[in-house]
Image (cartoon, rainbow, N blue to C red):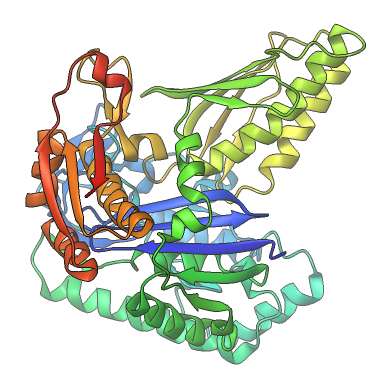
Length: 510
């Protein structure tokens, strides 16, 4: 059995990628093509307002909403000079936040660094969330498959996860003779064991990107985009592909060709693991992924013993409430609570990745009076989070059984991406958005045709979903109709309060 697989579903409206581990979805990535991710994009922006009271500024980057630039993300000549001195003494991979801590850096007031109307080069570090604009930084980075190029700094860093001193020395020796002055090169974990010529070729490519960005900045007017990051599939290949990925399955030939070229460029020979799926049944149905998506949107997550976890996402934080449910144990209450909490640890770790939950997180474990048991649960949580690529910070379990933690958030959670506030309960609940319902319906049309072999389909659907398909997703709808020779008749679905328990569409064949 292949341990890990990447399953890619691509259509005209969106791309969905599932990272499978032991035949279950471990992580899910979705990008709608009319709403591409901004993280990684580099802009020439113009300072709109400087807010001394918040030590931040708003920057016009040409997107729908202004970006947000906090003082700790503003470059200053003094910080760069002191950082270079510090980094010259280490080969650690340090973020600029970690550098600030080591330097015990005293922030310079933002009004001394920026002024309204000033042009700045900024990169998106966090997607717009809710009513907030994108989080911006002036600490530009260019991530590659094996290394990250960071202009302005001047050192060679090696991922902390590469703990072999011989390999760390080898990697550093590759770049010491060739690294440009005033540029930092950070070797990623994937660089372990990679030949020097492959690493050097990637460095040359990233330097060329930086030179191009500088030329564009000098010749363009603000606001304008200087560099757009890779599309979702290429980003996931760059960030997730490793030797333990046994197979990549894509249901679109053109996208598969693009991925093949990327694999040959970064990992020669690895395109042998690439497969193109051309079956009639939707690829996510074949691998059972649609069912996993449904479970990932549920508030209740069952535990093996009979307990369960309630997941509740709010604007400020996400809470996990652990309950014993119908599990009553076999010996005593202490053992029952411990077993349930240890099962919950594994589920919470998995759900954080699957649902892409970030920000402040509260885990309400079942109360444990024994401090030894509390320590066991805490250590189990720390071990579980070691498998998470997102940076986390976890505080000790309190006497009430609460864990407070943070997980780095760069984009919307799965719930925020696929659901919207329920219009009938004033936002106190969640329902699938019109876009999600429309995409589900288009997949259901294909599914019903493949199951029945009929080409005349009657679709009873809410009016807003029908209008979205005919106006916003017409190209995708027409592609389905033309491909299978279908005639699709839409009928208005009469929705009532009682009908809210029913599906918002129904497809039948005649």
